Amino acid sequence: MFGSRKSPGPEQESGPVAYPGQGTLYEASSRRRRPFRRAPRWVKAVTAVVSVLLLGVLAFGGYWAWRLQSNISTSELTAGGQRTEGAVNDSTDRLQILVLGTDTRDGNNSQFGTADQSTGYGQSDVMMLLDISADNKHVNVVSFPRDLLVDVPACTDSKTNQKYPEQQDAMINSAMAQAGIGCAVDTVNKLTGLEVDHFMMADFNAVKELSNAVGGVEVCVTDAVNDPDSHLNLPAGKSQVQGDQALAFLRTRHAFANGGDLGRIQAQQGFLASLSRKLKSEGTLGNPQKTLTIADTITRNLTVDSGLSSIPSLLTIANRLKNIDPANINFITTPTVPSPQDPNRLALDEPAASNFFAALRNSPDLSQPAPAAPTQTPTAPAYDKSLQPVSVANGTGVAARSNAIAALLSDAGYTNLAKLPAQPQSQTMVYYSAGFEDVAADVAALFGLPATRVQQVANIQGVQLYAGSDFATGTKPAAPPSSADSSGSIVAQTGSDQTCQSANPLG
Image (tube, rainbow, N blue to C red; front, side, top):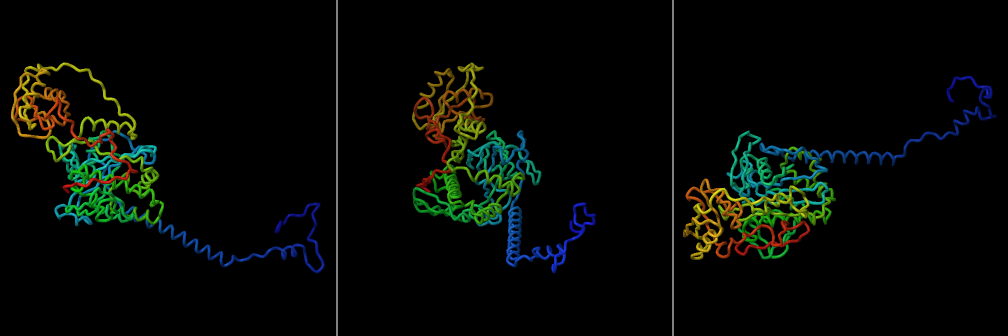
């Protein structure tokens, strides 16, 4: 070994062998060894370029991570509602995300309203529950009409700690207005029996910018639409909408169906279905530039709960959704009927709504049957039917119709009857005074009326069956129109359905 001071062994030479004219063997071998060469200039240039590019990518990624993260606003998930479920794993568990659109006119939304509308939380202009199965094979998007009357639980504003009492028969879109987004979450939890895991809330501006970022969304209407209120102006057939027209398509209340909230929901579902097909078919999410533009647009107009307040958390949800077949995205409207208290409002269609929520709690796969309702053995009423004061108010519009209805009550044992003239109304109701709850429930059951058609009032004695035009003939009132379709399926459409919205002839 070179440089060794060890003595040579018995078989080793005592020194280097000399060759004439060449010096020692060591000297010769040193001259044959390849000399050290400096790296060629092109290698240095390539290395420098790669280093600069790498630093640029890191800086670019760092900038976008910072920018997207700084865009996000957060709020509390609940407004005091109690939770019984533990934390979920956003990557592998079934998830329920409440998606809200606020009608606040603050900031970039000032053009859509007046100064008095630009403060506070605003009302939930759109309310949808996004339900993702654990295996990512089923996605349900459940719409709640903003005109739906529900019980809003007591809520506490997380920002001010101000407490708000429980409200009965309040419009569901008002839940957020006083105590914030968490109160809307608590209301949906109470209504459905589910426990929402996250929420996402966007404003008007988000729709405009997102529709521009994807290059427009295809929609379809059966007839030309020109709505002066929303400024939606579309020819019959298919159109691409973006910006103000996309927002008008989602906000219009008078342009579709009969001008009510259910027609507006169908249009919103059709818009989202078309958007999901576009993102899937055009590979938009595989284009880095478009993806960053969309992400920037969404996060700048987004408020989420603390569990979704990081870019990795949002990417986790996006990754679960991006590969789902649009045909497996079910758009559903909560089953409703016109409210007995106000025909311009909606009430849950029972028992269809309860059965639907039970099925949803049981499984995100709505092809699975709902849990069977427990059977109850009929029991005799704890009162004498013949003694109960029952009146029949004839609001059917058919003269002497109260005679036939009174005969049905008499056959059932209610013989203490009175017949009254009444103003016409569309739906049959059962009214009762305090202490006659059980009698009223039995009279309603006799005629197949849901609990939403039974109401306590103070100006009658006993029970009153107020017959409406739906009870002009037959032995029971006609079944009210439901938001479920005629086949009985609760699913209105899927992400793969290309629907055309029915234009309101009076719109």
